[in-house]
Image 1 (tube, rainbow, N blue to C red):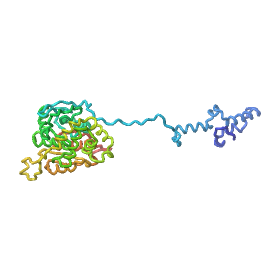
Image 2: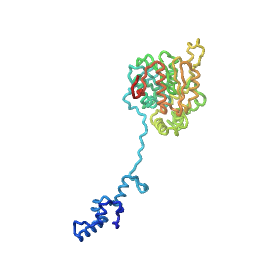
Image 3: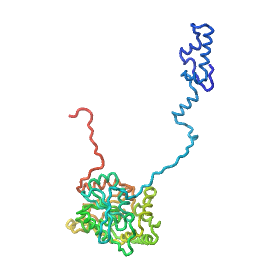
Image 4: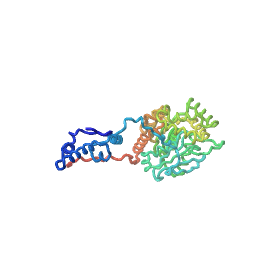
Amino acid sequence: MPAGIGASYRSLGDLGEDVYKSTTIVDQTQTTGQSVLESVKKAFSFASPKVELRKKDPLIVDRRESVSIVSSTMPSDSMDDIELKNIQLQFPPLRCLSRDDSSVREERVETDKGSLLVAVQGNRAKPAILTYHDLGLNYISSFQAFFNYIDMRVLLENFCVYHVNAPGQEEGAPTLPEDYVYPSMDELAEQLLFVLGYFGLKSVIGFGVGAGANILARFALAHPEKVNALCLINCVSTQAGWIEWGYQKLNVRHLRSQGMTQGVLDYLMWHHFGRGTEERNHDLVQVYKNYFERRVNPTNLALLIDSYVRRTDLNITRELDPTRKKEGLTLGVPVMNITGALSPHVDDTVTLNGRLDPMNSSWMKISDCGMVLEEQPGKVSEAFRLFLQGEGYVVRSPRKPVTPTTPEGNCN
């Protein structure tokens, strides 16, 4: 049977008896001429390409229409023909270390060695956690992200955190006077007495990193009655060796004369993250590099580094004889000693662990990280929560309890 251009047809055998009869059998109710003529019209109208007739007859489908329908419902195989225009890549904004946190209140505390900026976070009626930061950092860059972590936010419902900033290390701090004598590590520890007196705190839980951990350890040795427990991260218990002393003295000279040079920046990144950080967490590296370059006062940092490199040994030793443990040869408070597997301070924490009483201390090395608070906050928060629970503090778990399900059927 003929078909119009651009149309498709089926065999008349597939069309059923009605269509076959309408095109081949003469209608007996009409005259012979008329019936033949009508039959011819019907036959040609069946094959006609006109749109109106095709729409009336559902058996005829335009190929172009079928192509458009298939194209709209099926993925196209010729994706090379599609040209994307006005497409712009949008990258998420870099994380910003900012002090814009409404839950934190900053207060100035006057001491015998100058004033300290203390940031308070939480309900002051709750037990106190006192934090101290590391070199080149302050409470914002060292603890803000960690204590805003979801698990730690639950912990804050049970505690109040007091973030202590070393003199001149807070964000936007003015340059300290030239005649200012920066406190030694022992004097920085003694300044904490003024902080406890200002806020009316009888005792605290210490949480320190690096240089701050060393300061809190000194405070616990001098005033054990004012410290309930210690969480020390990358704590060094010995005096500086010759290699560290040489590097740090060079950093101090550059910071005072040239500011934050590339050499000082590289040392700070190594000090906090260890090696291979670019491959592990490129975005985090960029955040801290920008922070060191733009937000740190180099002169004030040089004074803190010079004080840290002149630190003395903690003079603690492990005493296994129970009759001599009361002599206070080591830290008498419970200690959780933490480091990262990729941190350059792993050996220092091992040395500290060997000088602590194994009955009230624990050593923890977290894998795949150097700066544990930034790279593994979940593991640190979980360990810290369990540590506090072991010391008798009631801490609500951040995880929802699993409700036991009863199997269907009668339970006898």
